[in-house]
Image (cartoon, rainbow, N blue to C red; front, side, top):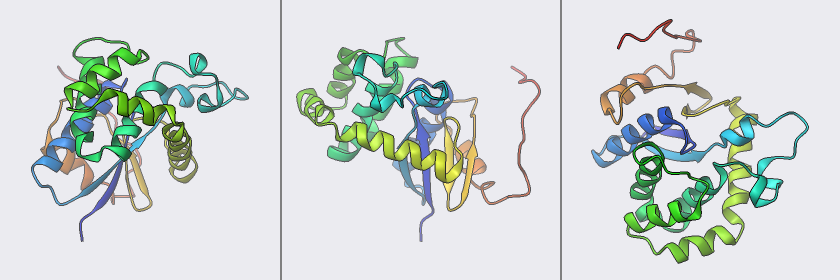
Length: 195
């Protein structure tokens, strides 16, 4: 049976981009794991205690990442054959092209580049379902695994926050995922990164 691994993402995080490019490459290369892409709102993670959750706020008060996450969820769930291409395009919009993910025009462009009809994706986003999914899946990660950031990889009861320094490397992903069950290791963090 293939390994079942959840990977959290917020399109604004460069380390999530590095890790998710590796996940997409692993899928496309036929790696034996099954990956679940889980949205995690960095806006919500950085909300002040007592503030309304970002998904309960008016659209203009949700933060810059919520729009892109809802588009990602809409594509993942309603147009799954296009998700991997959209996922990479949304990361590229932010990290290659320096675009603001809080603008619908940026999401439309990402959808078009992935071969999607952006009007259909926008209609799915407008239904409110992707926002509800964001609330549920973000909360599942926080309450069930104490996830605090992206990318976090979850397998069974184990969750590990990992920052890959290079983009898209399946060998780095495989090596890191092999450590998920090494529960006696809590933290391994370099004091400096030689570059």
